[in-house]
Length: 128
Image: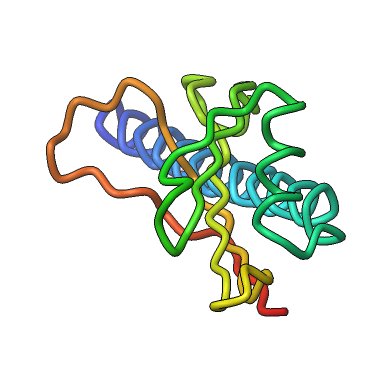
């Protein structure tokens, strides 16, 4: 009888853990999608490299790789989408030879990750 009760307790605990884990993952994914949507709304009206660099500088975002064929912008504000609240959105912009925007990508970026194989995860991309 005691073994049966223990088995039911373990089964209930595992069910709660699995359902909770799925809910957390789905909530986090929804939050990141919302972050990407906000970023696209913020920058997609800008059509040139110089306009994007000006806009990102005015918001205090970190601009990386501004001299290459692509520009990466790290949004400084942590967005709270991850459990550790160490997530930032990184935007990558691609331009044609005339410096007109051709594609924009939004990535998940986790600050403070010590894994040398860590790579940002693509949330969404849009072509123009």
